[in-house]
Length: 189
Image (cartoon, rainbow, N blue to C red; front, side, top):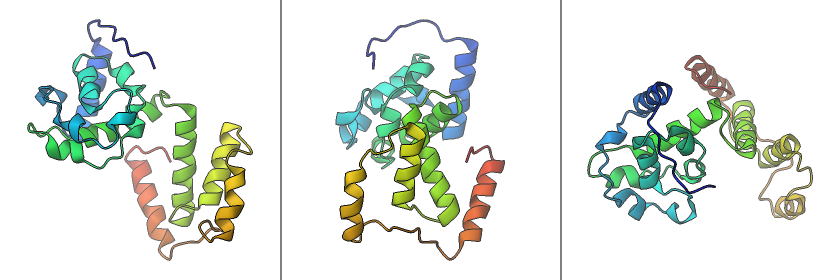
């Protein structure tokens, strides 16, 4: 990922998008004064291209597209350590979650990330919980990596770590209602 930041005034479209993201996340990036407590407490910051403080800074500078393309929003574990540590009450975890949804909507997410997201949600929708073998199969088929990680499957099945067939929860109808409600509220899957 290109770490160079190109500054130019935010367009009206970018300002509207940021306002939408802030409203959905229930927080304002302008509250942040870049103290760095969020990044200092983040257990995943070491693996991010932009740690939490820098994602917020990208948003403050109007570099919304760059923030939406950041790997950081996908690496975020949503543990909420950043939000709990923020002295100004910026809900960074909610912003990261909102940015993930926005990146998917705008097609700015890595195709593999979008494929995994769809496969995971489909599993939960159909079975009420994840079915690892089905998740892996659907993800690999969608991304064209037919035999990726195949050598791991059999040993995990033998040890009872992965089921051959999906298990279904008892309240699957309730799960379907949750997905129907999410779709009405603008969810994709």
